[in-house]
Length: 56
Length: 489
Figure 1 (cartoon, rainbow over the protein chains, first blue to last red):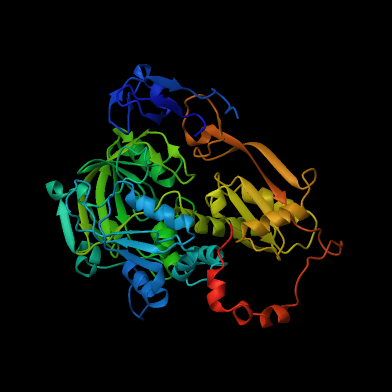
Figure 2: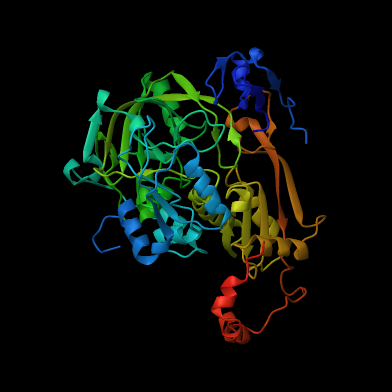
């Protein structure tokens, strides 16, 4: 999806995708690798897509 | 199939064993549900081999020896899909559509005649972890039932059922999230039920049936058309139904399914429908979806758990063949001389549509493009070709594009059409809005047809037909040497 965010888990440091809907609704991200749940602001790294258009 | 036998998954597998025994592979060696089954299917795909696979030695979600074998790749071979539809590889989509338009009213049988009722589990006896639910790809953090046809019942008349393949993500032994997508019929049933009554929606998920019945669950029909009747049409005989355990005759379930899961979707609760693979061969981020509380499970005594190989031909054909039929029907209204439609795996059997027409007038190629783009939001690129082009061969379609199209005159681009949220190039309507109508993308097509007669065009090279028939490779090269010459890319 064009607007998925890439997030690096603060626990296991694996990268996975999070819907921006979760950030907007303040829902914790859940790492699919170690199952750690954490607020997105605590992610080790967050890469957000360009807000309107995907930049190629 | 023997006369008088009910059509179900067993009858189809018997047909395959009898007619194409080499296309049903039974894997008796133990395989790990974590990635190994996907690895085997990905390797088969890469080898261009698409047998049905049956895994007999597995462990369930809890790691205990599993009582249920797992069947996958049921739709991966177009030849076997055609067998299920009593059709040919070329006409499978068209014949599927004709069958599914010929509705057949279901018949109701008692529980004693319903194989799906051989084992019944209710309440605390229910445990979804008993099933061999795989973990297919590396970023998926949980187990998802993929072969589940979610079925709901309308609020008003109580006799119009809606069916669709929608996933179930395991949250617990009796709890799942249901992948109801906004805008789908099942979502509408849920929204309507909650708005009108404030109560939860009764729902069933059935797993494992004849592949024609499975494809029938994906026919595009209006919401007020009973899809059990559509499935009967696709199957070629009335679908046999039987009362559910939870609601009795008020909610009927397929009598010949392998497994039936019954439950309620409560009005407000949402759960994590975890990160998962999708048809476009990418990951889909975690979303919040309605929760289903499972009330009962019934299944055959020796039930087969049907799984779908995501991101391969299995998933491509399951959705693609029904869509080919829908496209053909829609295009035929604009271009009566359309002869066939194919959704190739190179476009995940959703994004690219190859349309073959017998061109009789200028403009028909462009008409076909416009007609095709309005049928389904996933269709993105349409290539229209003449009758002499084999639309089941990507290389031949691209040859037509190379030699019969011009970018300045033969291409149509329409910006900002609604598309699937699964298109990685989609434009987001507003940041963070994941509703299905919020995504748009440019779509278009190429008219790669020759000018309509009597306008002349170059003539394609060919060897005389009678000589092609006469010269057989094995006569001149020999079978042994022929089999040793490696396949090229």
